[in-house]
Image (cartoon, rainbow, N blue to C red; front, top):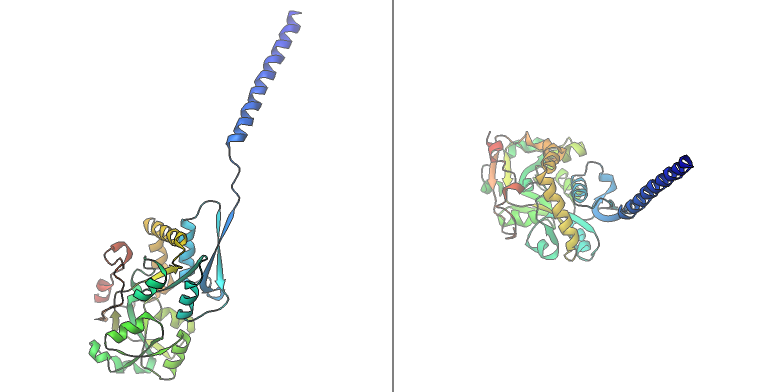
Amino acid sequence: MPIFYGHLFYRHQCLTHTLRWCLLLANLAVVVPAAAEPIHIPVKVQSTQLEQPSDYFTTLLTMALEASKAENEIIDIIFSPRDYAQARWINMLQNDKSNFVIWTMTDKEREQQLRPIRIPLFKGLFGYRVLLIRKQEQTRFDQVKTIQDLEKFLGGQGTHWPDTLILQANGLRVTTAETTESLFRMIHAKRFDYFPRGISEAWFELIQRNDADLAVEENILLHYPTAIYFFVNKENEALAQRIEKGMETLIDNGKFDQFFYNHPRVSSGFEKLKNRRIIELKNPYLPAETPVNNPRYWIDLSALVAD
């Protein structure tokens, strides 16, 4: 009997111990939350699928959105089925309150129409412009030392580009067309003498186009203060703050600089800037809110050019 009683007592203790573990596990099952269901965040962009995977702006936007999203959020980039002129993109965004993002150069009018995220996507590099010219005409530009010398030539620019007004405000003669493609056709047809392009555009575009008839002029570098931003609809403050937060994170952790300096849009032109004559232009259309005094946003090319 003592042995049997002890056996019952031992079984009782085991059952009690097991019950306690079951209760503990049950409690844990209550307090540990289930994995959150994934939430898809669709974001429309002005880029087309054909521009992937090398598109600078879509890649940088995706990086910013990924850096500012919750763990269970999935960013779905929705590409445009076709390309449009800048004025059309701006008009479309003004009338679209969904998650829609475009990128363009800022000016006072655009910041009244749209919500800018005031972080320069090219660190101000967009304000440094070289000239695309017909390859055989370099000698025509060899004697251009000042803006007055450049006034003798005719430039080509986009009809709705802020650059057009900036060049005209500085006394330069400009003819216009609606699209970049039209301007390339016009310079080949000798409709104008030079096509100002950003350092992040000129050499990259010639490589992409495999254009043997055009060249980057060898001596001149125009400069005016400006920035190209991401823009959203004025009423979509949540998206604007999300992009801004993500961009600041990329700057803080060094990923923005890593992306910027290694992208072919930037790296393809840096080594070709030495010993150029900088012609400074004023920009009367630069918004007062432009963060020109925040050094974390800008690049200074003066030392590189002077080497």
